[in-house]
Length: 177
Image (cartoon, rainbow, N blue to C red; front, side, top):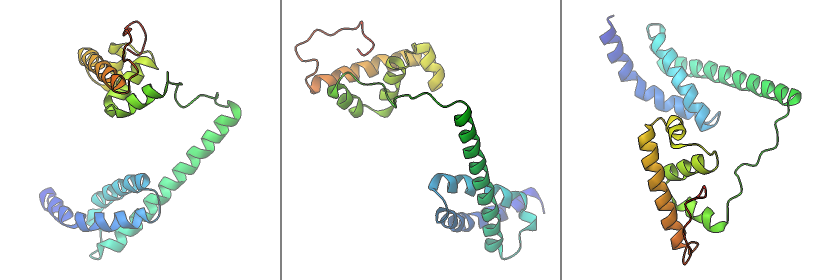
């Protein structure tokens, strides 16, 4: 069978297999693992399509079961490795997030778009320059600089709304504004 014919047949079967396999996997593991295992299962089904029997779904369930087993074994190995590393070189205690200036800042940041808040955190908490932020975000240095400037403006506006900057001189010397 030529590649186009094989592809056409596989594409006809795939939607029914995907739905059934996703339900099968979600009942056995978390959603993220289910999606990863589903991808791996469909890859195996494509590679072994010529071996697939007429009653393809039970065969695909078997592939999914084995792929899930591989994923679970990999996770157990990773957990054991992490435990060994932690026993040899315990991690330093680190706060999840640096303490914020106050509740007004926390509220203002939470109302920003996620992209703006991340940009500001990279700049303020990680103390990255716009060129370094550009590398992290996969954008140009110029774009990072412009986005950072706009994110700072949006943060100022949000802080004004909660009254944190009302009646005060704005300082641009600090890392927040």
